[in-house]
Image (cartoon, rainbow, N blue to C red; front, side, top):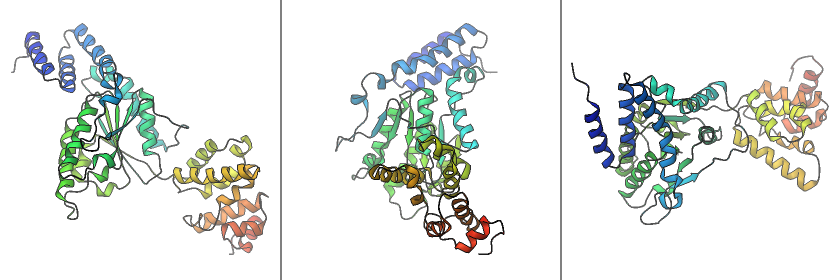
Length: 371
């Protein structure tokens, strides 16, 4: 049976690692010592408290962010975007599964001492997948804000150098820097640098990026959280998938989620709970949050320019083209709600939904759909 190291031997090992100036290695060693020293609770508790507090005081982000952020050696452009306090215009709307996953990430960081006492570490890497505009970037901002950490966003356009071999150097430089900080790092559009290595269309340089990324993911410290996001999960190299401890799928909103999101966009209390909210939530079901916000913003601008109430411009949010993604029965339901609620005439409901007047009349009069 192997004999445990003495405190003196562990101290020498700690000194050797500290002299290498790799902060994450020092933290990992202290975590291991804290786990093993169960017979000395005072020492273990002191180490856990030190690990919890020290990163936020020692991170270079707190000293001089403009000087510390890595840059491309040729263009001198920053390779990272920095948000010390991530801005969130309103609380995001997510499905129950996504909300639970995000809450758990935050809870792990807030109660890291409980994990460490059990010999565990918080989640180090998580992958967000889903179509564009469903809140993956907003989710990373929400997590960073909730745990009180700055958000670093990898600027892929800056990292992708025109010089062969430089891109891998830039990527390694960015990831090494982020590993030394107490932060949330977002690798947006991960598929741009982590495509399948069996893709014959990709040049060798891009394939080497996958190897660089895998090495960095394996060595990612628990002092920070790496969040990667992609709209094209099917393009990712299988080995990249396996390196992430968690995967969270963001889906397009259904009617109830669309209704909640619309309620956040409308300022008029009557619109927040009125008939338009019910109708638009069905019309926008299956559309991305960014699409919904863009359409509502256009209507707000038109209302402001015309000096009219917003509800006078809400019919413009509905058209046969905008409803084309909905099943036929849902399109009929939208048309019937418009006419049956008295918001527009049956003729107008036909114009903006493309549903025949006879079908609308039959539905609103309760005789079913004969159209």
